Length: 355
Image 1 (tube, rainbow, N blue to C red):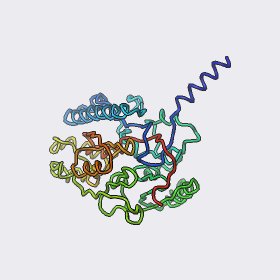
Image 2: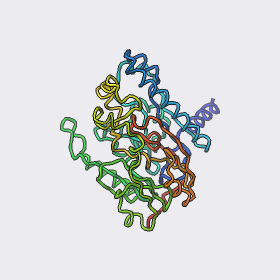
Image 3: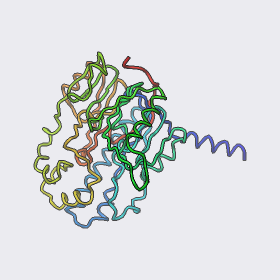
Image 4: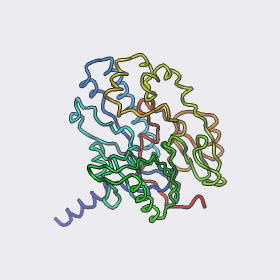
């Protein structure tokens, strides 16, 4: 009996997910990939085919793309994880976004997994993380404060962008956001990080990408690179995405710039349904630049959305090999490659790349 108990304990330990992340370019070994409802979910719950057919197409093609991405990662010896749930529990219920973009909910800072919006979709994943590596909280009214969509990790340095809503919930007495910011900043500084806070109001992973030490792809005026990244080579990439999807302009006013689905620019029934019932599912795609939303496998390999000669020449200069992965419905989900994944474990330690 003692041997059986020991065997079970070892098996449970081996099935736990290791957690570590000090830099976006350290070697990736464990990665979470998002998931949507199946096409059957939409066919079962929406009788109007003008609505259910395009949403079913999104579901099928989104899953096909997830599986392609999973193969890319597995082919480079990265262990992948997917959320699982019973769709029947959500029949007729479109409240809450499906776990398409794990990055919007979670962050790995050092050796801690932060979950501010842990939903039932991810409960199976969270159960596989040791308590000493898990930071759960009840700050649900604060949107993704510890998400690594807002935090860029560069070894010892954390670049954290925040939109401050300095309010206290009068009925519950929950902390003001600024109090939580101070708490987290102090926590991370005690762990040895340098924390750089900005208030530009954007996802950092859609504004700049630290590809490897000395190498950044960025929009203009995102950071003061000469001061914060002295001597680093920065490729400034203007917003080129929307020139590639000009049909979006036909739909922009109807959707408030929030989402786009190719071929459905004049499907007013679909547009009304999404704007009414799925408004929490879509983001604000007009302000997103997917060309900088990339996922590093290691310092020499990066997954990107499409071919760009200027970017690929820059990668070659820095000995970085790009892998093209086309997430076809990123303009519906408002999520690029970095958004639809969450790195759980990267090899490496807290190195000082900027002193």
